[in-house]
Length: 57
Image (cartoon, rainbow, N blue to C red; front, top):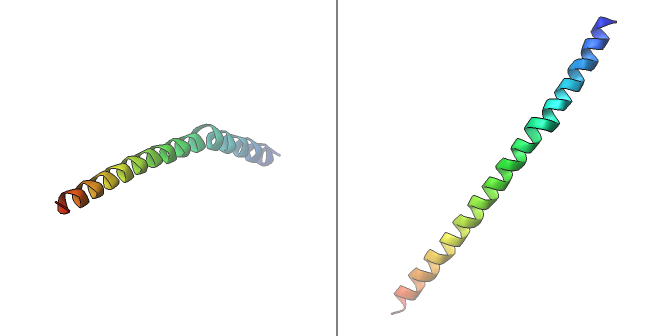
C-alpha cells in the first residue's frame, strides 16, 4: 500500500515540477531564440542591402 501512495505522490510531484518549472523555462528559451533570430535576420537583410547598394556605384 505504501508503494502505491509513494508512486502517486511521486507522479504528482513530477507533474508539478514539469508544469511549474520546466515548461515556462522552455517557453522563455523559445521566445529568446525567436527574438535573437529576428534580430539576426534584420541584421542580415541590412548588410545585404548595404552591400548591394555599394556594389552598384
